[in-house]
Structure formats: C-alpha cells, structure tokens
Image 1: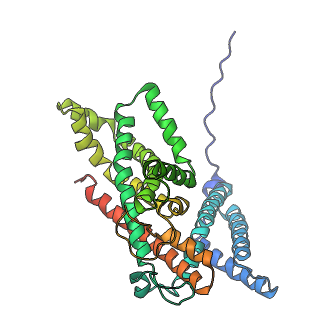
Image 2: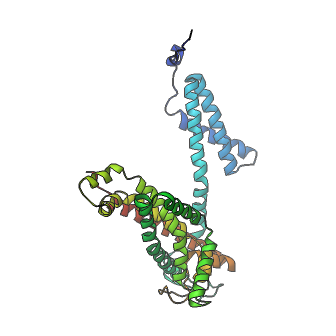
Length: 357
C-alpha cells in the first residue's frame, strides 16, 4: 500500500501581521540625521572625532535602532527588509568612499596650480626648482599616444569580437578566448618590455618615441576591447539576425547593418573603458616613450614624447613643493581628460544608438 504526501500550501499571513502599522516615510532620514548628530556629539565630547569612526558608529546606531523600531511596529518581515536594504546602501557608500576620497584629494591639491597658464605652456627651459612651467606638452603626448593606440586596437579588437561571436566555433574559439583572457591579465611593464625588445630588433637600441608607447598601450587595450565588444555583441537578439537572413541579406551585411549598429552604444562604452584603462599607464611609457622630454613634440615617430602619467611620476621623483604642486595639477588634468572622454563616448553612443521610435 503506497501513501502519497501532498504539499501543504504556504500559511497565509496572520491577522496580527496584516494589522501591523508602518513607520512614517520620514523615519529613515530623520533617524540617520539624528544618529549622525548624536554620534558626532559623543565623539567630540571624548575628543576622539574621526570621519571613519564617526561614519561607522553612525551606521551601526542607525541599523540597530531602525531594525528594532521596525520589529516593534511593522513586524519581523519588514524589519528584515529594512535590515537588508540598509546593508545594501552601506556597501554602496563603502564602495564610493575611496573614489570620493581620491577625487577630493586630487581636486584639493591640484587646484593650487591648475589654471590656463599651466595648461598652455611646457617645461621647456624650466628648471625643477623654478615656479613656472606647465603640462601642455604632456597633454599633447597623452592625446597623441592614446589616439594612435586606439586607432590600432579598436579595429583589431572589434573584428576579433565579431569573429568570436559570429564565425568562430570549436577549439579555435576556445583557444582565442583563452589567450585573450590571458592577455587581459598581462602586467603593463611586460607589454613595455615586449615593445622595447621589438623596437631593438627592428631599429636598434635607444629609439624612444611616441609610436612605440602607442604600440605598448595597444597591446594592453586589445584584450579589453575584445572582451567588452564580445559581451555587447552577444546581447544583440538572435531574432534580429534571423529576420535579416530571412530577407536574403548576406551574413556580412547583417553584421554591418544590424548587429554593429544595434550594439554601437555598448561598443563605444567598452572602447572608452579600454582607453581609460591605458591612459594612466606609466611603466610601459617610461620604457618606450621616454621620461625626459620637456618640449612639445607632435611627431610620434621621432624623439621622446612626454605624457601625463610619466610627467606626474617625474615630478614626484624630483621632489620639492613646486614639483609636487605640478604633479597634483597634472593628476587633476588627467582625471578631467578621462571624464571628457566618457562624456564624448556617451554622446557618440547616443548618436549612433538605434532609434526606437
């Protein structure tokens, strides 16, 4: 004789749970403000006020009081929801704290010398101890080197991603994916040494220029472009490809007219992320582009070419208050350049994104 067990339906909420009250909408902000004020007063009374300690104790006090009040007024379910929500917000603020701290430190120290004069002159003829000179030659070098690296890496990376998504199969696809993943983790100094060895074989020792630096950055950019572009291309619905094939459109035209325009916004974002990944690299550029250029050089294939990361490194290495001010101002300039690139990428992605109406 066999017995069958039937699954019991979930128990409905009790009448007590349904009749529970709720905390007012202003409870959370008021409690957070009050907790911060009380904790600050206690720390100041004991002369041990610190931003990190104050933030930690405020979060703990808010969490304990909020969950306790929610349990008494709203019930255990709502209290768990408030607890998890507070943890999520706390982790977000914890992740944002280093970024905000870095930005604030750079802005605070860089604004002392950041002006039009600093952005429009070079260090040609300026001694390290002189209160003069600017970063114009480094801006020119950064844009030229990064631009050439982008021209090299973007076509290679995007076409490789197209091959992996649309054509490659079997062991070849796995092998390419494996090597791209390996290249993603290559230290930047290794890319610089590779280009130095290649340049020495082709041109002999001592040939430092912006083109070799751009090649080193391209080695670092290509795997990032491949991985980001591959993910964006995979997000294109297969139905769009099948609809194009059903109309008799060949595969190459489907890729150029359907797949790439549909993923243009994501591809642009991935390319800018790759540029931001390499625009601050210092080690490969010290080996390939040089670190002693003080004048403006527009020729990527002749002479050393200064750039913002190497300029910051060289100023900090020389020491002194004036050089430190130049380094902080150059760091602020580099951050602004990256922000401008992200803004342009968003504009380009929005311009080329497929129209939904």
